[in-house]
Length: 112
Image (tube, rainbow, N blue to C red):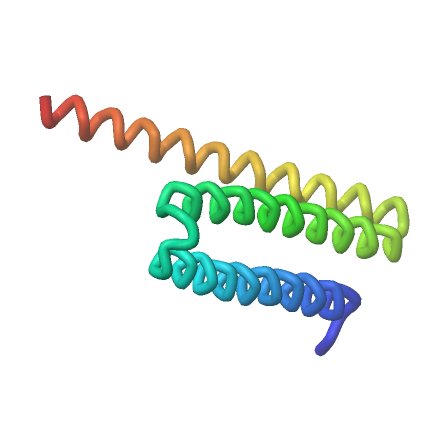
């Protein structure tokens, strides 16, 4: 059964896919320019790094726009429930990260 979020999810995934395809093509072009000696490897790395940062920012902006659009279709109660759920998920992820960090520290201590 389709729900209200399906179109938003599809738009988001299409945007991410387009960014990924653009990044792949850009990397191909940079590799070609490096092989031809038209730019140095360091210049290629710098350009790739800048493009990745731009793509990350664009993805974040797109995600935020989609969340905003989705939330505009919700009632206040639905938005509050959604925000509470997101906070719960974030807390769980924080706990998981803390456990992983502790396990890594313990493993490093055991190796010493």
